Amino acid sequence: MAERLSSEARKQALGGLPGWAEIQGREAIAKTFTFRDFNEAFGFMTRAALVAEKMDHHPEWRNVYKTVEVVLATHDAGGVTALDIELAKAMNAIAKA
Image 1 (cartoon, rainbow, N blue to C red):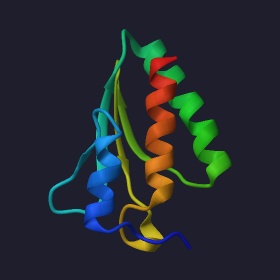
Image 2: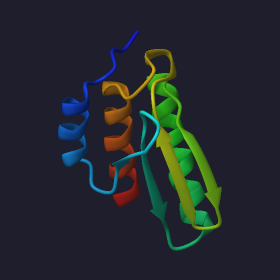
Image 3: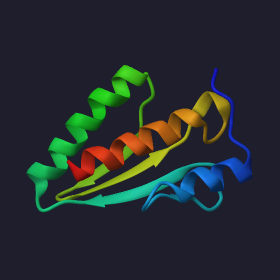
């Protein structure tokens, strides 16, 4: 099982993740991605889903038209772990592609 990051480690990791922020009242990180249209948003979700499946680490997300709201936390660890940081980095890279 992945270990939860300390508050300091989480803040340091977020410094290298543009657009991601901690959620108040919950140990999780979140970002809203905005695309040109639904097709781009859905394409992002499809590519991110393939990465998440390979990692066996799945996001909480919501899609409305051209936006995708993502929340990452490792439920069995009770908070943010290195897996969440890795998936967040991958999602940022996919969104730029």
